[in-house]
Image 1 (cartoon, helix red, strand yellow):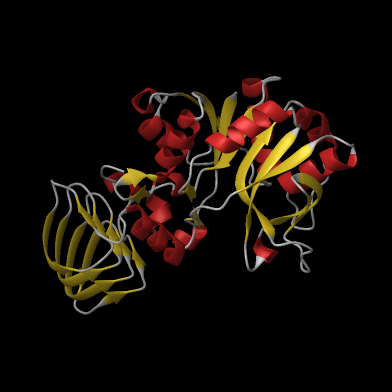
Image 2 (spheres, one colour):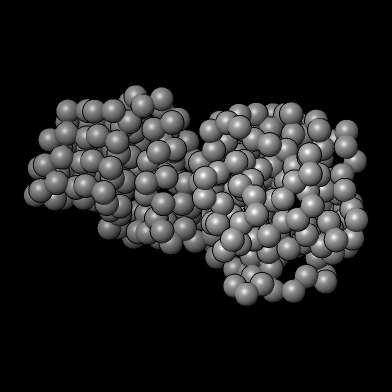
Amino acid sequence: MKGVILAAGKGTRLYPATRHIPKSLLPLANRMTIEYGIDKLREIGVTDICVIVGENVDTMWEIIGDGRRFGVNLMLHRQTEPLGLAHAVSFADDFIGRSPFVMLLGDLIFGNSFVPFANRFRESGAANMCVVKWVDDPKRFGVANLDGERIVKLVEKPQQPESNFATTGLYFFGPELWDVLPHLEPSHRNEYEISDAIQMLVAEGKQCIAGKYEGEWFDTGTLESFLATNSFLVNGGRLIDMSAKVDADLGDSVVVGAGCHVRAGSIHNSVILPGARVNVRGRIEDAVIGGVCNEDGDVVRQIIYPVEIGELAGA
């Protein structure tokens, strides 16, 4: 089985940090976000991985390279336009060939192993397995209607969901996917939706199944969710890189990256990105800070990164 990680998103909700560091490379608990996904794929025996990137291809290649440092083989392909997940995965067709593969969104963090889902997909012979999770408000996701484990209907971001099982961003596919992608039409969002491609497989009578995920699951795309993920990964504690210099009272869920120089009154539930120079007279709370930051007052519920990308240090 091969792997595909989708990492082409700009991460606009995390600006300005993602103007300087690609979203999938932002450090969580002092490791790049994409590393957690690579770990999960390697755990299920997937070591040949295609990473779909966007306009940040040069930075991605410079930092993650061919994957040897992670114990895998990486190939990078650029998605020419941001036209949806199904469009993104189409750039991996030559890499995948007719092999079964697993596809993962590169900005997600899963607390539990993928092993049970990989094993079930391998033994099922299904054209697709969507890993889904029961959520209270499924309108923001692809939503699966199930009969046992069988997917009978899959709709992207429905206004009136018929189920609470949301797609998590982890998918397993057989070669049947390549047969339907050329016939896919853009959605009302002008995107080629992977949910629509799976629905086409369902309509053609192909076996599509769901694996129900019950562990911790994070989308790291907003300040709130990024900080919640960070807190989960450090178990509410503190992680200060040995090379960092910090002069502040430290509260819970604080991560300070390599090479940082930080002076503040206090720090709580915040991430100081690698190489940052921070001088805050007040408190830092619910914040992500990179680059050079000098503030006379408090920094609360903010993302600050006021330097050019050439000054990126140690992502």
